[in-house]
Amino acid sequence: RQYSGAAGLAYYGTDLTLRASYGVSDTERTNRDGTGAATFTSDGHTDSVRLRGEYRAIGGLTLAFGGEHQWSSYETDFDNREDVTITG
Image 1 (cartoon, helix red, strand yellow):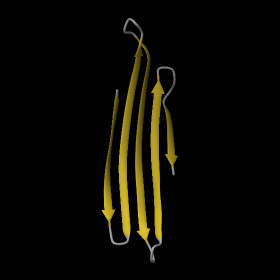
Image 2 (cartoon, one colour):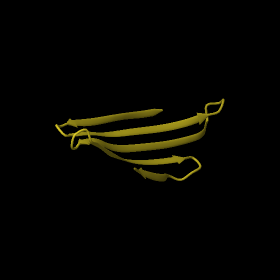
Image 3 (cartoon, rainbow, N blue to C red):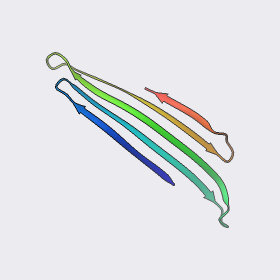
Image 4 (tube, rainbow, N blue to C red):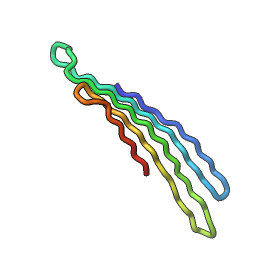
């Protein structure tokens, strides 16, 4: 079972354009054998935020910039919960 979604905002100014978004994903897995008994389960969750922009400077010069941050957690029947973050 997986649920995911995203929402965003945009700003379009004369010299500046900004786009921001937030996303989320949640995944739960259960593997079963032929009798229906669970043999493996896992649960994972990820959130992310993004910002992208463009600044139109002098003449045809445009400066593009952006950043993203993502944080995730994951656990299984056999592993403890682990967390990771990525920033770029």
